[in-house]
Image 1 (tube, one colour):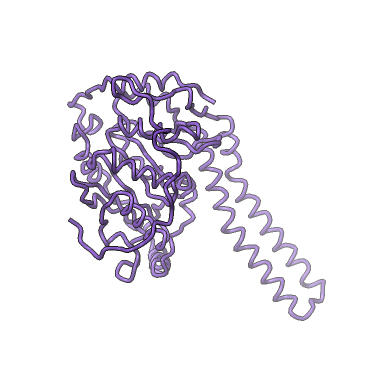
Image 2: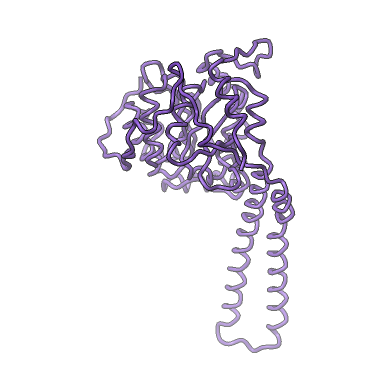
Length: 377
């Protein structure tokens, strides 16, 4: 059991005022059912993906052309024109600013275009459900996390110095390579061997974000869908955020979800936001989280690491794994997967133990067949 100083705080968000009974899903023989007319999938857009692929190198080409042009103009004009006092310095400063801007902006633009092209070629949720009959793994997160870049970076000496400097100020660790991937896409390989990972998509987005297959649900019925998928999921993963929706989901999980079925993820973040997220989780789940998660004087770089927290049957938090951006590339995922397997009913999934058959769930099979008939938009 984790021990520590009890935190006295006020929750920075309020739970939605929506009546709980309004988001109750319909039931058949006590089993919650989906309203399939309230949800849909997004179509793949391969043509748009090809366009993004072709545009990916263009920022580098344009940046190189602009820099070469600026250098040529500066070289040609300097002997012909008598510069005003301080003019040479001004030209040098302007060219320097232009260089820095283009050197930073061009790689980030290329990474963004490459990431957008990958989003256009994501596997269709219908195909995932058609080829995998196991009960799903539900991934909950604030929609703002979809834009979060990945946090795995090369283990370079320069980055260690930058990480230490940023960490001491409670700032997130940043890197250009983060823009080409997403936080969710880096967490996903930990859970994919255990079953199909499903998430609820952001309303009005036309291209799904990198990560788990998305189901898109009408805004007034998202809580109903969460209740259904929490009921059928073999594992519920929630990436902590600071929204009213996350607060409602945490309270619902505390009331309706078995403790061993829940896995909470704290992603690398700003130090103060990490502490706010800890307060939200403690308030909603009625638990005391380990002090190692908090950013503070004794843990100046805690917010730069990702923590996976599981719970015992009596809701005592247990740190399942810690992902450090500095060693994330070399850290074996198999060890973390085996720890996650202990949370599942079948212990070791068929993907890790091919000799163990997958036991179908009749109630989930009915819901899965419903989802296979959902329309695409």
